[in-house]
Length: 225
Image 1 (cartoon, one colour):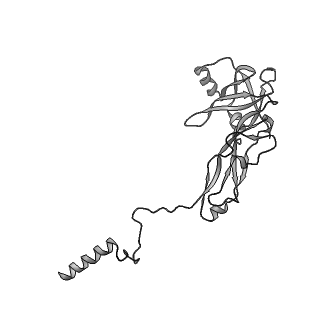
Image 2 (cartoon, helix red, strand yellow):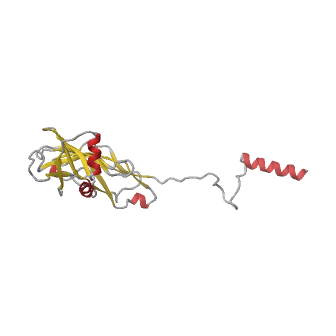
């Protein structure tokens, strides 16, 4: 897995006012934290951060580089991007949380699922229904898969793939219930819209039914009159 590099610097000013000033200069405030370190307040370039994160999905290992390499507590730290806060209208990143990891310790992360192929059940008229879009796995930080691929070609109607059926890279273990359904093919459904039914020229109510009997009686009364 390719490692992404992001340049950061330490920041001394904190609070909403300081964060607004940083954003007005094209910077993103953030924090660097982890189980074996104190929290550090950091800042990075908004444009660079957006460019680096744009092609990524799921959990991805990131190498932090200090702006001039002089801050040993920040330089060459391996992290995961735990959370980003985005503007509700523009979508730009407002804040970033970096979680430092130990490359020798296993951790649990979310990995996206990619479905490939066209299920035979879909060809027969069924509907492919993904139940999960990502799964949690346990692995070393350097072994995090970019995604897990699932070939659905052989799935017929009512067939399903479960967590236990997934093919994962060596050293990667799925977390969760093995019987959890990941994707299934549902049987076709027929939707009858209001007002739809017998077309003109089709047979009317069958003889002997209440509707047919009522129609016959009405015809007789008309003829007698």
